[in-house]
Amino acid sequence: MNRRWGRRTGSGLLVAAGAMTVVMLVASPAAASPLFCGAGRGLTVENAVQGALDDAQNSAQSEGFYGACTLSGEPQVFETFDDPHFGHIFRAQVTVTCEP
Image (cartoon, rainbow, N blue to C red; front, side, top):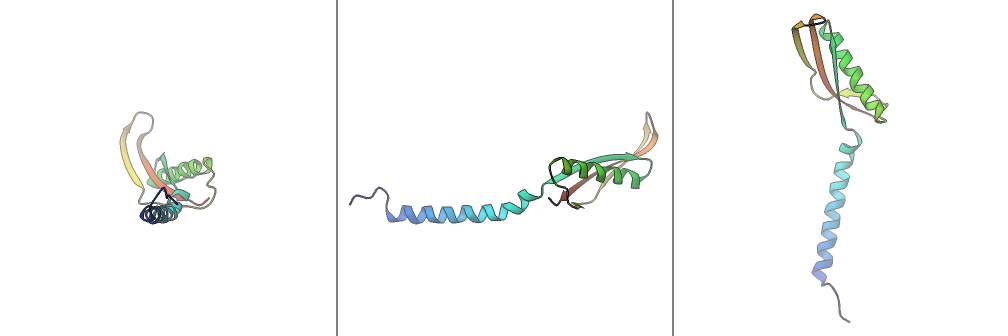
């Protein structure tokens, strides 16, 4: 009987398949909850951050993630003193992960 591949090839393929399975299992949770960004503005820091959270949650819902959202890191807040329409305002940016 003439074999096309040797025994070493079969064991190498088995190890490669096992490693690929481990990588797929580890990567699955990361793919299940992507990061969503949101931005907002307001006259106070709280209003700007709340607007950014609402924006990020709306982005998540558009992708089918209707569960609870949690912050991923600290909100970034920027203060502007010379906005042409509002004068002194705050802008905020947040990143969240949401449950499906």
